[in-house]
Length: 148
Image (cartoon, rainbow, N blue to C red; front, side, top):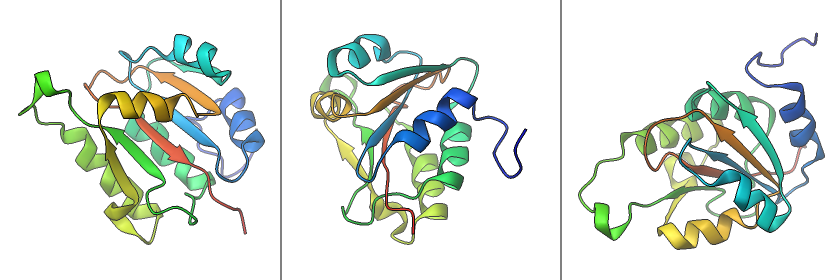
C-alpha cells in the first residue's frame, strides 16, 4: 500500500506511468478501440482496465502526471467520423473540464483529431490502456510533461 495514490490505478499502470518520459503519450481507449492490435503495431505497452471508465481513470492519472507544457495541445480526442456527423459526444466536454482542472491552459489544451489522424497519434503512444468505457468516441491521448 502507498499513500496518496488513487486506488483506481493498478500497480501495472503506475509502473507504466513511472516509465514514461517527458513527451511520451498514453492512450486511454474506450471499449471499442482496437487497443491490442494498435499496441502490437507500435510496440506500446498494453494494459487492461476492465470495468473502469475513462473519466475516472484520467482524473486519477492527472493527479500524478502533468501534461506537457512544451506543446500547445497535450491532450487529444477523436473527432466523429463523417458518417456520424451530427452525433453529439458529451464525454469530450467532460474531458475538457478534467484537463482544465489539472492544466492552466484549460480546455485549450485539448485538440480534436480527425479519426484516422487520431489513429496515427495512437501509433506514437508508449502505453495503451483498454478501458471498459462504453461511450462512443471516448478515446483520449495524454502527453506527459516534465516533473519539476
